[in-house]
Length: 286
Ligand SMILES: NC(=O)c1ccc[n+]([C@@H]2O[C@H](COP(=O)([O-])OP(=O)(O)OC[C@H]3O[C@@H](n4cnc5c(N)ncnc54)[C@H](OP(=O)(O)O)[C@@H]3O)[C@@H](O)[C@H]2O)c1
Image (cartoon, rainbow, N blue to C red):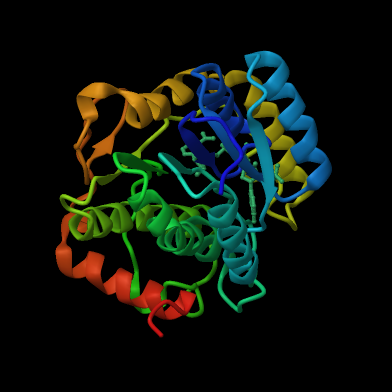
């Protein structure tokens, strides 16, 4: 049994910086009960205090999960579902990029593990609680990079690893996933859409590990010239809250309007191929 108020519940993954943090703040200002995830307890608590202070809403909670670990995701989902028993909005926001090929604790290339398999697994585990809170929405934060999914080498075992391409390929998975899930959730009261937030100032890529000093320096130099996350936040909040999107599912949004997804992501056989691979890699198939 929940001991919380009747406020609607939003879960935002990765809200210790960038878009996740500003989205969590925006939802708290709207009077929602906001749960966000962090992987560092101290950073999480500092962020929680900042959001409470800036929003005047005390119903802000932080929960720990490292989404590069499927055990961590499963433990998180179990505790979340027991604690809150309702969920009206899930924003799959965590994203990271890696300059070298790294392997997760589950033996999976990190871009794929963090950017695609993590939201795939987490969403599956939270579906029961989303379904008992209808109407509810899932918002996947994607990106708009020109790339294609190489199904023969999803984990960069045969090609020379290129960080940006690995990031782009894994984020393309967000679109495949969105469209395949929308088909399965048709008329369930749970909608799922993907949003491209635009390019903005954030910590993206700065924590991916093993980053050459020069690259870190160049990326850092570019940051002041990028837009703040304000516009990106408005894009996410629009897909999360706007009444005119009630019941709308399986769409891709840019700046508060639908945008054309890359053709490959509309190919149902490609969506289903990635779905099956993802079920196997996350252990959901069994
Ligand atoms: N920035 C852009 O221009 C841009 C453009 C298009 C799309 N996007 C997308 O927007 C989303 C948010 O990115 P951002 O730019 O706001 O990035 P960010 O500032 O780096 O924030 C990423 C968040 O994810 C968390 N995170 C990273 N790896 C994690 C892990 N293994 N387990 C748990 N949490 C983890 C980070 O936690 P820590 O604080 O502990 O690192 C942080 O809270 C991503 O999906 C990204 O792909 C960004």
